[in-house]
Length: 332
Image (cartoon, rainbow, N blue to C red; front, top):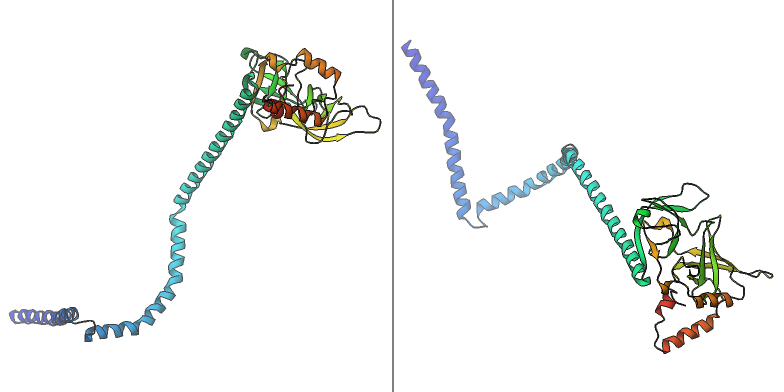
């Protein structure tokens, strides 16, 4: 038993020694080669062998990369699809938030522009007015009205004119404590004393059943042409004179007609506005004077275009201010 045990121990020692020797030899050779590789120059034999091996194996490496590339790409695609679902949801949420923010800022900018226009109109015409917001519109085809969010509690009364930043849109016809109903100038029951800005030819701007505007009762002796601006005349004491109403889009005259058939394009529409001004009172300068009414009655056809131009030029030469008449028609 003792001899057998000693034999087994020697055998195991021999096997362990045999396994370690190649490892030690290869380690020593590697250290020597590494030392020589470091010490020799770029043209040394070990460098030359390394370059040769690299040259020989390069095609194999390139072929392996080309074969593996499609599989790597497919792996990346599947990896992105599976790993980025949460990211895509987050990006979608951020995109919705940014879109909402852009819409909010755009709306705020448009509101600011409209309010700036109202302030400009109020300042230009020196209007005593109250700002209001359109909150509703008529729901039938027979009337053309809007509802604003101011009423008798805010000092509004029936017949007060209503204007947007671009011009007149209508007149209050009903008032409650908190809201008012405004009849638009396009309503067939609407009528506004008006005149051609350049020649001062007098007429009545009336809405039609088809929604269009017509300047009625303008004598065929008057000087009217397409593109003429129509403004309020101030006669009647409801609307300040000189506020824009629209632009002449067509002028027709038949052989036996006494008056023109004049179609006017609205200066503004309620659909394009949310904020408006309600004119609460008129100054003496904004109402037509007795002289204005007398002149309108005696020469309803106004003056010729050449005469009007000459008068403006003479006024300019005298140093008087004609900008109000030329730009807004607010003086006669």
